[in-house]
Image 1 (cartoon, rainbow, N blue to C red):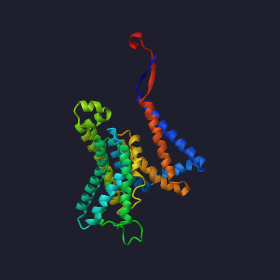
Image 2: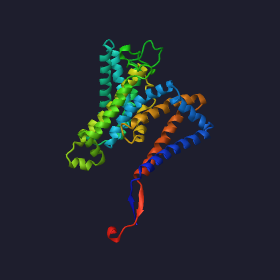
Image 3: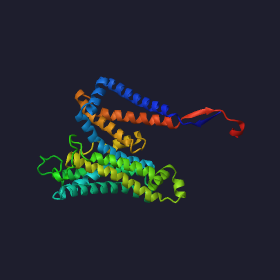
Length: 355
């Protein structure tokens, strides 16, 4: 007798994943019950706040944009077994660069100004991630550590600017930059409240990345290097070059998210720029199994969770409860993936096969 790996049928995979999500929600309900809250009331209010009204859907979509873009960056790096934990810092650097363009070149026409802001945000995020790539390729430093530590540098840099040289003199001593000129505001989608045109850009980039990873030579190399660096090296693939390219592109997605946040939502730079979009993106990427198209519904779901989290505060539930539910969902999904991809079955073998 020996254990051999087997592929579970699709219906079993679906049942396991659905069961994992239900277990996560059950655990969340138990924790809420322990804290003295009514689980059904809290979860119901969260769902209603996220998707129970047109306004709720609009705000959930608005939060899904930075989550989707940061998630695409994290997922791209992970496809090559590069662990980009720095999407938060890359997001802040993209916002900083875009804000600098908006504040210093505010007299330019709207389309030109927005294009320059996007270029600046993408470039800043890419360069910030490329720093970790250089340290990985030149000194073999673990990108998990370097990208994580660079987050604090980026966040504190933005904090310095809004408390110092970029502080709004008319801001009643609050750490904020002046509001951008209207030309630096991303246009909104008619009839959809604050939802801006960046939503379409994020959706298009998700489709483009899915196609590139699936159908191009570059995407093939990314997959091969991620699955077997030894085979990639034997085939003559430039692993160091691809490492720099992939990390830079990963940071570019997060940098663009930062640009869209300041250009489409806040219209200024401030220290409370992100509620943790870059960190939540790590959960998104793994829940979506690193699939760019699957990231779209996952980002909308987590955008709803975050938006619904503000609603449940009216019931006395702290916003941290949303992070708790997100964490439980991550553990549940990862556990389900282990059960679906590492299934073993005990089978009989002949003496010849055993030898």
